[in-house]
Image: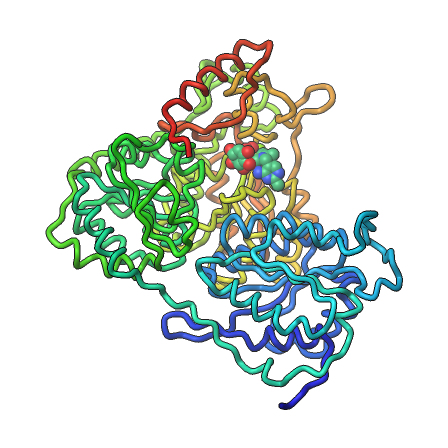
Length: 636
Ligand SMILES: Cc1ncc(C[n+]2csc(CCOP(=O)(O)OP(=O)(O)O)c2C)c(N)n1
Ligand SMILES: O=C1C[C@@H](O)[C@H](O)[C@@H](O)C1=O
Ligand SMILES: [Mg+2]
């Protein structure tokens, strides 16, 4: 058997170049490139290997490890998990910065390859710079913090360990039922150590993203359940999107009058304007979807994890009467809600189910159209909210007095409601553009009122709701869709938390548009605390002497080299959006919006940890009402 003498890092890069994926008859490289922040833990190992021969890998310099890993995640999510960017970091703080991003990818089931540097396998220089030096074990390093947030984790302390480790890594990342972050920690001395690798290790390897078909028992059971139901409802989750099940979903919905409702990950599998699509479900859902869910006697959950936001903390359905049918590639997910389980690919299952449902018609009838119409009227109202200096009733009522709202209007020099600004963005940008959101009040607003009219143009991460995904993710989406505009919809809080990759986007001429909704605070958390009886406590951005902060974000981005706009009216917003489309450089549009003007409610409930004892009546009431609500909830 032929041998080739390479360092561990050189072997790793050579191997990455030879990984291919096979999807529906097409074969292409699985690893598109690699994001790097070099330090002593990786520059002389992986850095050297890449300098010598990167192969087809596109190499980018990130600015923050968390940011670049989130960009890699967004890329993979946008590519429907069929391609990845790897991520290389130094040791210690560089790898610790990956933890948040790995958690985000894990919660969202997105493949990601993390390659943090590690301490010396030889231990000769210990403690090496950035080694935490645990007293109880020299074998524990910062990288162990990545174990709970990785789908597969390994540490390479000998060059030959790479052989089995990489094969496991790619098996995990290319299995739709297990896809998630893989972490391979590389002892920094071992990265540079040479070994005689078998040449066949570097032969082209093809990973088959086969569509697992349902077995006959599953199909028969699913068909029987649907035919026995009067009002079935299809809950479209991320699994439906990754399986590209749009056409069969529409066909089934159309033929059998079954309404569709969506999770955050599932949105834009089917266009929002499709007549039977009632939109987002649950805490951040539409009234139409939530009303339909209460009526349903069968929930067909397709590729969904049934998070608390989707199920309104298990109060969204009529659990006395409703049954569940889950179609999921993950057995663990399929088991939820005591459902009848079909552990298989969404598209294949639905296609095979179709002929078994001939002649079936749900009893939803005209209700679907009526619910959709009612919701469209509500969206229309939200597009025209007008601020008044007296008796203004924002969407989130009874939190801020008119005086406080006027104070914000004065300091931020705006009368814009967030819902109205957001719908104006929706109406002005090209429908083929992709939006990115993740934390704060915007994910709720977009799930309800954003009309996605083109498939896969909604890249919202709401499994981890990680502040910082928004701007970082926009870079990843741009790498996935270089010919389309991408829009990061981000709150001021999330922007402040992490926007380092805006600079990376500018540096490499990968144009992204940041649309920053500045309400001077952690608005949704302020709503949460005030909605549960607390006062406003450390969630508004106020100075030591209680003045509302007014930050010039446009100036910040201008300093980086972005084309920037400051808008305080809808007219200015539309002009800025049109101009931003024409730019080649990244842009930032700073929109000052009034607090309390985001959406909320629509017959949903979120179980949050309210204090059982308190000296505030409002909190006592919140606790009591939670207790009552919990009595109506499914327990597990
Ligand atoms: C990394 C991270 N830290 C903390 C949180 C908790 N959190 C959720 S939303 C939020 C505030 C978001 O503020 P902003 O981006 O301004 O959005 P707004 O609610 O004002 O629209 C916080 C602190 C989080 N989701 N992610
Ligand atoms: O705690 C949170 C509350 C949600 O409203 C918000 O969207 C999310 O980002 C979060 O972390
Ligand atoms: Mg804010």
